[in-house]
Image (cartoon, rainbow, N blue to C red):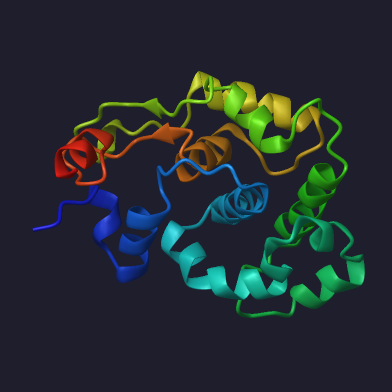
Length: 190
C-alpha cells in the first residue's frame, strides 16, 4: 500500500502533485516561475482550488513563459478578470506579470535558480517530520528570502507564500518520515 503525506490523499490531483512535484528539486527557471505564480494564487485559498485551475492558468499565462508574460498589457489582465476558469484576483494577476518582469530584467550575477538555491547551499533542507501538524507555515529562511525577493521587486511573496514555494520547488523537503516519497524511504525502495 502506498503511503503519502496526510495532506495529499484528498484527490487524484493532490496525489499526483505530491508524487511528481512537491519536494522534488527544481532548477528550471520557467518551472520555478510557474510554481511561484501558483503559490501566489493559493494565498487565502486551498491548494486543491489552485490545482483545479492549473491548466487554465497555463493557458492564460502562455505556459508561464517569462518573456511572454512580462510583456502582457493591462488590457490583457482586464481580459483575464473575465476568465471564470482561473482565480480572478487583480492584484495576483498583476503580480504574475510583475514577477515575470522582475525575472526578465534579472540583473544579479547569477540566474534566478542559482540565486535561489544558494540560500540552501544547493542542497534541499530536510525536515524529519512525523505528522502534518509539524509542518511549519513559515521559517526564518522563508522570511529572509521573502525580504530579499521584495527588495528585487517581486510581489505577493510573503513568508508563507515563499515557504510553500520552497517546498514545491524542493528547496525544502517536508515529506513526512512515514511517506514513501521521503528521501530516506526512496533510498530503501532503490
